[in-house]
Image 1 (cartoon, rainbow, N blue to C red):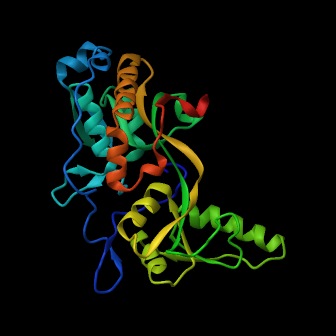
Image 2 (tube, rainbow, N blue to C red; image 1 turned 180 degrees about the vertical axis):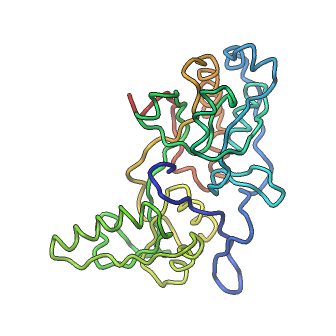
Image 3 (spheres, one colour; image 1 turned 120 degrees about the vertical axis):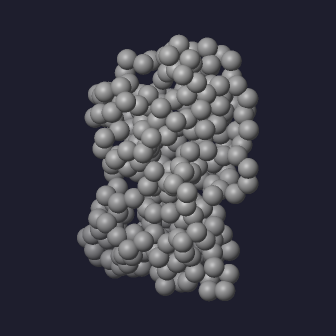
Length: 295
């Protein structure tokens, strides 16, 4: 999650048939055509006149967080969050106008009027809620994976070897803390195998070089969906926090319209259809909320 993790997991995981390896040279696409939605008139009516007349939402995004939001070879934004955002805008009779930005500049640019929203895997937290409102659209946490048919318990990893991408929260905080708890209990520590890229960490598990892998839940879920004949999820996400779309606190009309559009997508099934296409539906919500961190 952006803020909790010190490095972003990188794009993609494609199974190489002859080697059994994974490689990030081919970007994931989620497969198939984009999900079609119809305009929700009630949600559309909530929009501020300025947005309705413009016909678009200007979006600040840092597209470097696959498979959530990243760029294809032509430089266009793609990812499950982009698909979700495009469908949400379509529910409102609008389009999304994505503007690339450094992650730390997005919220200040919303407050300065450059962007209508910030949509870039923001972790909703109380500190950020002091500046902006968040429309919560997904629950992300940490999630482990294991080799197919094996039984790994993320709450009892003592003595296991676990792969991670280097400099992530999993390497710097989660696993060291769990390993120390093992030692304190008189058990074997966790061996942490760090890799420069996420695809290398996934490949190590697929080839049986490690017992488990730990990563951000959407990253782990997508990895499993792409290499499902070799690895599977090991338990549910934990330390879950909500992703939120950032909106200026003075723009409650837009905030509420976005909330209504996303809820309409949950109700008609298009929300879950998009998440399932990308293999990240475990973090899907039943109800769209506002400022869940401070609730």
